[in-house]
Image 1 (cartoon, protein in one colour):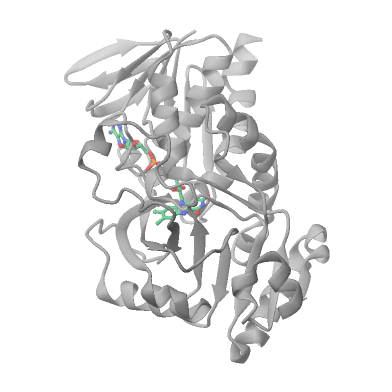
Image 2: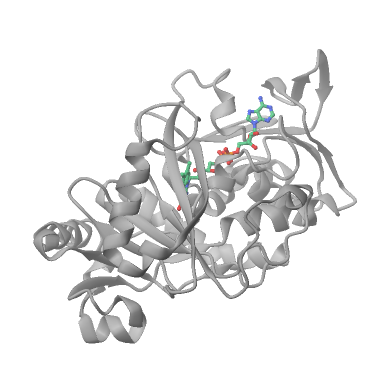
Length: 366
Ligand SMILES: Cc1cc2nc3c(=O)[nH]c(=O)nc-3n(C[C@H](O)[C@H](O)[C@H](O)COP(=O)(O)OP(=O)(O)OC[C@H]3O[C@@H](n4cnc5c(N)ncnc54)[C@H](O)[C@@H]3O)c2cc1C
C-alpha cells in the first residue's frame, strides 16, 4: 500500500518501523525536521515502568506496557541501536520518614495486579549488591521486570535508519493542515493515499477537541562521581522524581544537530535524566525555578555526590493526553489515528501500534 504517516515523533516512528517490515511504501510528514528533537518522544526519559505507573494508571496501561516490553527489543535492533534497551528493573526508595508512603504505594500496586505480589523490599545490603552507591538507603523496593529505552538515541538512530530506506519519502518541515480517510492536506494541496495515519501527538487538536498538553520538565546531569546503572525513583509526598541513566551519551549519533551540540558527553562521565514535573499547562517555555529546585533538591538527597554533578541540559515538552489519560485508537477505512499516550509513550507505543494495525490496515491487507 501507499501510506502516509503524519507526525514522526514516537508513535510515527514505531508505526513506520512496523509498516516498513510489511512491505509498504511510506511518506512521512512532520512540521519539524527529521531529527525529531521537538517531539515529546525526544524529551522523554524512556522509562518502561508498567508497575510503578500503576499507582495512578489503569491496569490496561500495565497490560499494554508488558506487551511493549516484549516488542521493544526487536524495534531497537531494527534501527541498529543494540544497547538502547535495558531491562535491569527499577529501584524505588524514600526518605525514612516517608517509608509509610512508599509501603502504601507498593500495597496499591499489589492490590491492582497479581504480578506485583513478587515485588521485593530490599535492605541496604541487598541494595548494595544491585547499586553499590545507593547503599546509604536503608530500604528500597525492587521492580525487577521494568526497563528503559535510550530515548534520544532511539529517535536519532531511527532517523538515520528510516531515512536510508528506499521506500520511504520524508517530507520534513511540512505542516499538515488536515487528514481525512485516504487524504492528506498540506500547503494548499491535497494528496491521496491507500491509508493515512495520524500520529501528530499534541498537533492533532484540529481533529481531537478534547486533547490537552501536560507540561513536563527534565534536567540532564553529568558526573564522574555517580554510578547508578538502573532507573531509580524517589517517592516523596510533594514531588516524585526519577533518575534515568544515559550511560552511552550520544555515542553513534551523527545528525545535523550534532554540529551545534553544546552538551557532548565528557569522556568517562555518566549522564542522568532527572524528571519529571507534571503540570496542567501547555506552556513549552524553559524550566521554572520551582521545578529546578524541586528536582535538584530531591536528586541531591538520593546521593550527595549529585551535588557536584554538572547540569548539562534542561528540556521542556508537553505530553499529549485525553481526560482519562488513556491512549486512544480510532480506526476506520483508510485512516487510523493514535493519540493520548500521555506520560506513557515509550511504555505503550509498540503495543498500541500493534493493536491499531491489527484492528485496521492489517485486516484489510489480509
Ligand atoms: C518530560 C517528559 C518525560 C517523559 N518521560 C517518559 C517516560 O519516561 N516513559 C514514557 O513511556 N513516556 C514518557 N513521556 C511521554 C512520551 O514522550 C509521549 O507519550 C510520546 O512522545 C507521545 O508520542 P506521540 O508520537 O504521540 O507525540 P510526539 O512524540 O510529540 O510526536 C508528535 C510529532 O508530530 C509532529 N506534528 C505535530 N503536529 C503536526 C502537524 N500539524 N503536521 C506535521 N507534523 C506535526 C510533531 O512535530 C512531532 O514530531 C515523557 C514525556 C515528557 C514530556
